Image 1: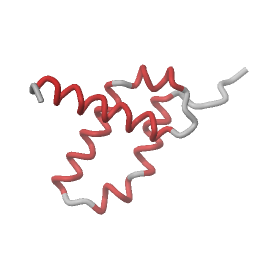
Image 2 (image 1 turned 60 degrees about the horizontal axis):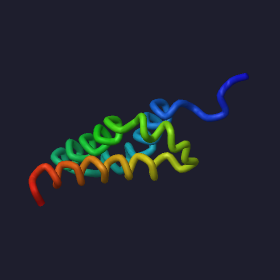
Image 3 (image 1 turned 30 degrees about the vertical axis):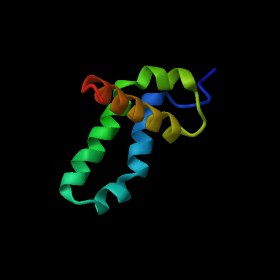
Image 4 (image 1 turned 60 degrees about the vertical axis):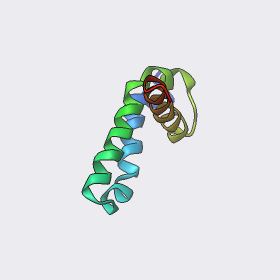
Length: 77
């Protein structure tokens, strides 16, 4: 039997494609920032794969928030 849901890596790519119109509307500097946010979600993809959430962006946003929070903690804030 095949999988009923795509792997999260594929789902992540599909979600990024859904956000392309938003990304294209940003100026160049903000596009780089958004790309870095998506990169942060890829850093924690193993946690997202285990979550099996039906709304992909929720897990991606949590991974982005986790990454940002870790950066703040490393700065001593």
